[in-house]
Image (cartoon, rainbow, N blue to C red; front, side):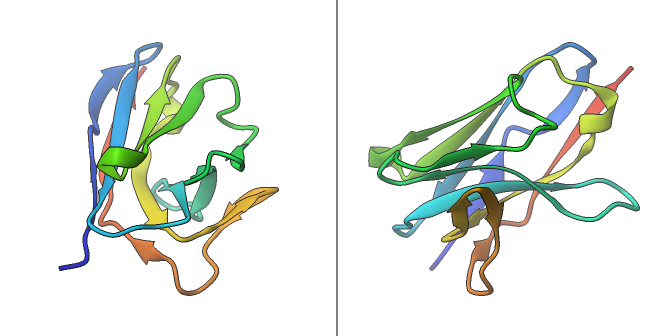
Length: 121
């Protein structure tokens, strides 16, 4: 069964840290992280290619969030530091995204179900 599963979300105080994981049951060439806050559009925040050649971080998270990859485990991590209340959202990972100057679903990307991150101020 093809699966893409996010984990690691939760409740954290402002200034704190969380690490999200995205594990895939299939191979992929680029994986992206997106988030959607209530009443807002989905935002692509980070991505990485399986060969490590392409990475991207949105300005809103640059310097605070770091994406990394464990190829053997087919798992990508999003280390989130210095969290702010505006980081509160459902975080999704998607496989086989367009990753480079931004991160986008090209229409055939596969998506996880999301994990909630809540940052209390």
